[in-house]
Amino acid sequence: MKGLFKSKPRTPVDIVRQTRDLLIYVDRSPDSRESKREEKMAELFKNIRELKSILYGNSESEPVSEACAQLTQEFFRENTLRLLITCLPKLNLEARKDATQVVANLQRQQVQSRLIASDYLEANIDLMDILIAGYENTDMALHYGAMLRECIRHQSVARYVLESQHMKKFFDYTQLPNFDIAADAAATFKELLTRHKSTVAEFLSKNYDWFFAEYNSKLLESTNYITRRQAVKLLGDILLDRSNSAVMTKYVSSRDNLRILMNLLRESSKSIQMEAFHVFKLFAANQNKPPDIVSILIANKSKLLRLFADFKTDKEDEQFEADKAQVVKEIAALEPRDRP
Image (cartoon, rainbow, N blue to C red; front, side, top):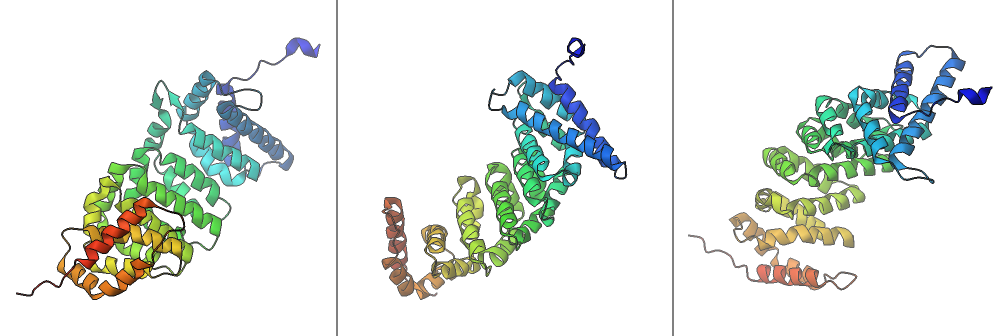
């Protein structure tokens, strides 16, 4: 008899709705009977795995765009994303990983040529506060961090994070004692400062003073080698980006910044020296050097020329050699300005 009443296969919309109902149950019923709760949890984990399978495909089939669109539309029609984020700590490790992949994929799903995740997040921007605070929770940091990086693919979301008080916290998050979490925070920090060019340029112009004061003291002058190396590399990426040319001009006009970069040039680490050189060359190439920059370079002229004489890359690099020759030429040509 059983075969006569085969249940209809569940549609993507059904799976999202059932997932939402189960999340509501998990969110609201901490004290329900243990066996019932376990049963509901198992069902929830299975549903999250199915959502992942629809979005990513599996070993037997590729994802079907129509199914993905239906799933995405239903997911953002109500508060499923909010529920999934707030209930994440209650899930087991495998379900957390699956949920993180589901949230990541949904940021890229288009419905009728629109990224509806972006619209949803703009209306629920406080979810970013939860994801960022996740860096303070060892169990959740890597899951929330991965979700956060996908959400800031949307320019409006990245702008919210950049303009929020949270930006200051990244100077500490990138130096957390847990190496994996610090590295994850550093990856998010880099993404925030490099992905959306016009938004980043506007943020750096408006927040130049406090941002670079923190950047210099907490990152470039950190006692941690990895922090210094990542920070000087990212600084080069930021300043060498054409959209940040106004910020770059301001940065290379500061004697304090020059002092920090000259110290980094003297490091024993080849990779820090190399990254520092890419920033230092901007000071040397500036055709409108302020007098105090000129006087520091002249005072250190022989030391700098000696340093660059022995300065080599491990592999042959024509661009580096050309840059180095130009820097040497600029410094060698510097003469004390006649005082009036």
